[in-house]
Image 1 (cartoon, rainbow, N blue to C red):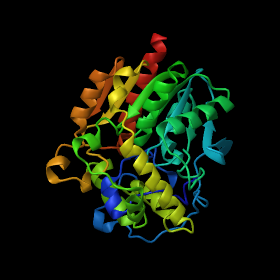
Image 2 (image 1 turned 90 degrees about the horizontal axis):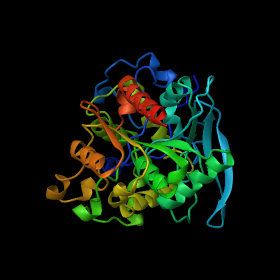
Image 3 (image 1 turned 180 degrees about the vertical axis):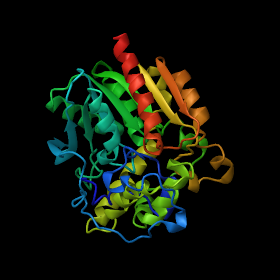
Length: 368
């Protein structure tokens, strides 16, 4: 299919892998990239995984194919001309609703491939953008990254498409952005869906030390496929590994093999600083829209975890507790827990994940 060249984009170094904040992905078995489907059920031991060799991609993922046609939203922000890459996928039999899929720190719009297929088959129009600083979108070198700014960019994109009301789905760092979007644009948010979002705790307040942008940058320059793979196996997939996970490792690693490595690493450093310094945790009680929490219980993600003292590290990333606390804090919340899944349930068990997602979307449709 179109994922033959799947192997590139923004990632973590062996160190940053441990700090990685996002587990965003594509589907595992039936929703895996077609280039990997034939082996999607195989379990590959870590020592059998490929090393650090692989394709090199451009700073905007040039050379890497997306599952659907990619469009560009051109706009000016902070005095700079920018563009956001996005997919706009129409269903054969529309049900009148639009779903916006927001990727995480270590993922791209392409990794929502299986979710796009399931949603459009159910009648939803799907918009899947790459945020500025990520994947196929602009990599500005002097940009004030904030979740407010990314929410404004996303709202402008939807406005350009004539979309005034949508369900916003955010995974990992995309969950932090989705929360900010729903807080800023409640009238434009029909429903909020949070898939193992980060930001359900304040790492800084819990004692995780600050890293400067320069420190993040040095870490990002050391990004390798092996470091990404180790982190993803431990955190995204709760120790499991399958061959259909590998394309997403290469997707991340590929931009760090390409000619734009330094630009990619710099924007990644700016984005890590944004995530660490802009918690959404304290505003969960202000959400006014129906919210569905889809939480893999074996997730342990926490930004800066490896830089924290052992006693602090032990208190971080307890997703069973974090998900339940968030469900209590958010006024109109529904919590679905996946007992055996990690940070990327949509990749690890797409069948269970998509059933819960579609059931949750249908529940809101029935009540409105």
